[in-house]
Structure formats: structure tokens, C-alpha cells
Length: 138
Image (cartoon, rainbow, N blue to C red; front, side, top):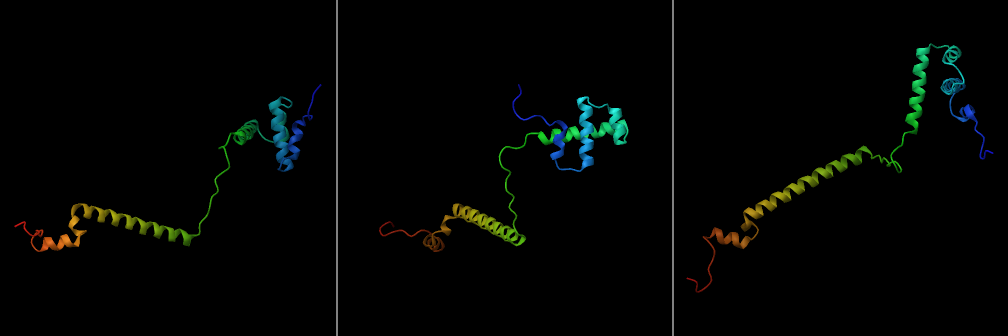
């Protein structure tokens, strides 16, 4: 005893989107695959040559394979569009930040090579002829 719903067979095509002619063509192709109809008879009903029928059958089967291929898991990423003005503003901001970062790198390099530039008192002492000595060091 079988349980569940009865198989509708090729009648499944009736509930799918497509024209009656498209459904008829797929039905004839599937009937040749199941052996219910010969290729010559299907070609005669469709009004095409056996070579054209072979191409159609291949396209139908390839489409079926492509449709059931596993996809990427999860929900597709949302594509957020941004208006052109906002895009330009962000590009300008990015460029300004890159310039600021480069300037900070240059300042750091100068500070490492010439630390007297960071201490104005030390710079004045160097200009006057060297470091000052405290009392009694002469």
C-alpha cells in the first residue's frame, strides 16, 4: 500500500510558468527520455530534425542541472547602493586621511632624526653655541 500523494507525472508541467508550447516541448523531450515516445515521433510532432532535437534535449537537461546545483549557503549579501555625491565625498575624505597619515609619518621620522626640533629650549641652546652648563661646572 502506497502512502502520500499520487505522482502527477508530466502533469507537473501544468502548474509551472511558461506557454503551452513550451510545456508541450518539454513534455515531448521528457517522454523520449522515459522511453514513452520515440525520438522520431517527437521530431515529427515538433516539426524539427533529429539533430535539432538533440540540441534541445541537451539544453533542457543542462538547464535542469544548473537549476539544482547547490548554491552558496546563507542569505545573499545585501548590495547597498550609494549616491554619486556621497561616493565622491567619501573618496575626498579617504584622500585627506591618507595625506594626514603620511604627514604624521614624516613628522615622526623628523622627530626621530632631529629631536631638538621638539624641544625649543634645546634648539635655542644649540644656536647660542652649545648646551649651557650650570654653576660650578667650569
